[in-house]
Amino acid sequence: MFRLGLLNPNTSDRHTVSMCAVAEAALPGGCRVVAATAPRGPSSIESAADSAVAAAEVVALMRAHQGLDAYLIGCFGDPGLDAARELTGAPVVGAGEASCLAAALVARRFAVVTTLPRGVPGIEDGLERRGLRSRCVGVVPLDIPVAEQGADHGDTTDAIVRAGEELVRERGAEALVLACGAMAEVAETVQAAVGVPVCEGVAFGALLVHSLWRAGLRTSKAGAYAWPEPTPYAAIPEARADTPSVTQQ
Image (tube, rainbow, N blue to C red; front, side):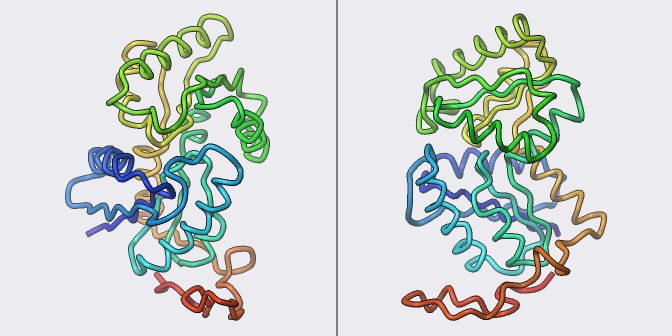
């Protein structure tokens, strides 16, 4: 049985529950999703400061949920992604990278709908790192925070639809990327309304990491993602980076 660790780096149980439902619906029958919410830190990740704290919580969640078959970081900013890959031999995927990869596979030109304006430069930098900046026709913020995303916020979903329609009509977007894990549960609604593929990283991320596992691909321990050196941590004894610190897959 495939066991996916779905790690929510913010402290919102509501977002964890909604993302877990999306992942479970996407995965084949018989798979199990072990969903975990960060016990401390930001209730939503809106800034670089929030992301820095959330990355540390991803590391803590990885250490607390050892031995699963794969992991998905349920946040578009992928906080702590490289660190998580250092801590396990299992495959690890970030929701942000998954959604962008999905868009690049189904469209030549895509656009990103995000939450706050301050997040736009970081998303553009992420697209640049992935070699996808030239494929993106725009990153448009709704000026609505993460905390007000999801199926419980109909006005927000309407705003996503309006932004998507404008991106398709005015900028030639052939697909949309939803840049927030909390948006995952409204992706089908937006897709039906806008009429182009709508990519979110929870469903596709769960399927992508499941595919890596099925293909027998594991996180390389040669080089960048090698087990961390056994460095003592001051005042954080539980975080001492013993090698390997998480059950090897």
